[in-house]
Length: 299
Image (cartoon, rainbow, N blue to C red; front, side, top):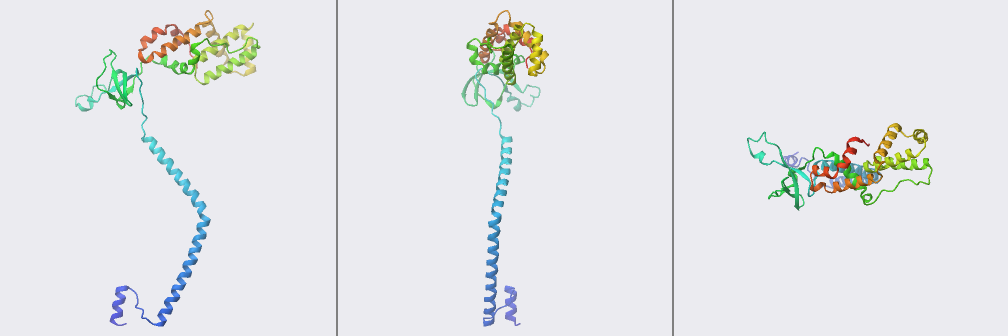
């Protein structure tokens, strides 16, 4: 190897091929073998893709679905529930000045309560004090939270019920059974209606069906014996407490059959004024219902 060939080897890291017939033939054969090998590999790769493509497609879809669910859970954790307020609601306002004062550690975090006076824009509210003074500066809804009176539970437990039976408050509730039917058929029908009202947590309609079930019990000649027979046939759980409850409710309204309708109407009128009145004002409209709320425990 001369010096020129050695320099070529150092530069290109390969031996120099001189333009001879043998070298051309050798390279042509190597190129032909390489092409044949590439074609075989290409066909093998194509056959593999054709066979494995459906499996890869399904597995890719499954991975995409799992990743999308992870992204959805992460996004749902970051999303904040926006609480809206209506005119007349009682709210507390966050004491933002406390964050700027160094000596405000013992100050309350919330001020109020206030009434929602107007809603000039979505998420923006104007407040009114309990004395009727309207605050000039609108407040963002993120600085407000709902305020509940301590005795608010007495009226809130009837609020959803009165919404459900709003159509019944404008007329007398009809008797849920027919007098021409047998006692067993009537009692079974009323009991089914009572179960439906109890499962939907409708306290007012539960009271109504308890009253009519107690009326049926009193109609029978031997109430306890008739009730025991009815309980055995229908496999009613907690029948003793149910018997005492329906008879007690019937006795409460026995003197005045229209008292139940008046009670429902009275409560509905009081609830409709709840947004613009305090709980003490509601007690004026609801005096006839206080004994019932304090003494009865309906599930």
